[in-house]
Amino acid sequence: MKPAVERMLDRRSFFTSMGKAAAGASALGLLTDADIEAAPANVQRNSIPSDLKITDLRVAVVEKAPMTCPLIRLDTNQGLAGYGEVRDGASATYALFLKSRLLGENPCNVDRLFRKIKQFGAPARQAGGVCGVEMALWDLAGKAYGVPAYQMLGGKFRDKVRLYADTTETEDPHEQGRRLKKRMESGFTWLKQDFGIDLLKDVPGGLAMPQGSSVTGGGLVMHPFTGIEITDKGIAFLSDWVAASRQEIGMDIPLASDHYGHIGVNSCIRLARAMEKHQLAWMEDMVPWQLPELLKQIKDAVDIPILTGEDIYLKEDFARLITAGAVDIIHPDLASAGGLLEMKKISDFAMEHGVPMAMHFAGTPVSFMANLHTAVAVENFLVLENHSVDVPWWQDLVSGVPKPILDHGFAAPSDRPGLGVELVEEVVKAHLKPGTTYFAPTPEWDNERSWDRLWS
Ligand SMILES: [Mg+2]
Image (cartoon, rainbow, N blue to C red; front, side, top):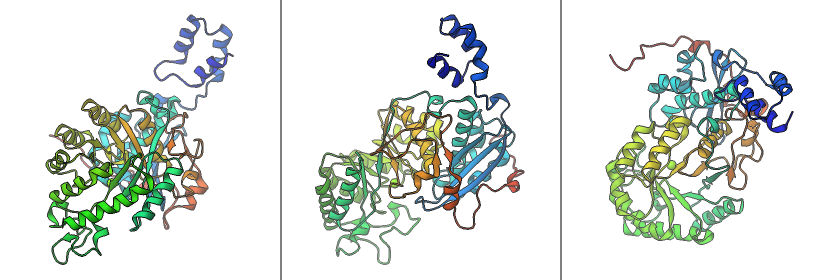
């Protein structure tokens, strides 16, 4: 058989039955009668998508990746397994709680199932279960129909995905700069470093703050309510600090930043103005995303891109921020934002308003693949985070994708069906959270029920 025909028959058409495809190709003169006769024998029919049903949801919690990451596996009545991942740091319970809503459902109905379970998600880690399941549904749908996830999202805008990596922190700005430089030398074309008021703890007169409060902002106290402000001396110190780290890498490479501390909005504006000359790629989460008026105050006052989004669940809150003109760039985390299709919707809304999208990420290669499939399939993409550059076994958790996965500052999704990777059992088992098991049965979640309707 001609190679082109073989490829076409090997990857089953998403919408067209094999018979129709073969007949159409035959009409175009591509196939002989012998080819059509031979076609069924050449097709890998590992699933009948219309009869596919979810039979189980199990978890395996990996730790030190560097985060703690609950992997989930959806099993089916046809032997196909789909993989997803609850957001880093979140409890696997967020996914297990959804099992009773998924048993017996056809995983190929991704959007309908997402709408069924999305009421059980909420901002940040609380969205992790819904988003992890959504990833696993795409993995199953792709495996059932024989197409990669990016193709089901509409195909590619790019073949490879630009990455940025956080850099381990040190108080010595020149050493920080040298660590950034190492990232550059390994191929990264976009960098990130954190700096904040913790650097001022030994700088007398650097901060004005209520006696007894801490530079970490007191945990759950939001920025405007800590009473912590940076003095001119503190701002000058941080500006010199960033200048010293910039010295090592030059001005030509984008340098993002985060974690300034819980300071008031006026201090945010003064700090950001002092950073303009250092050409930061963005300043992230200067105040919580729940306060769009304050974000807009900062954005309107400074000539540096203002960004937020890693904890926002669903398109609606991104739309609110974008419509309010409160952000220059959005920064969703796919495992909190709602999964692959919701990311596509968020991206499209932002694109219509001239807002680019960077992507926050801190999980294993399973969730990373979901990110890659999405990143190639959205138009306004800037750059995707990876937190695991210094974890040597990170990429060994999966097979099915060319290695190294992180290739000189870029990565590409697999062309295999679904998310395109399988787990390497012995590697996952070697990095399980102590006291947890590898995809043990979860019958205790089979019958968890409530009256789920959101209206009367
Ligand atoms: Mg952040």
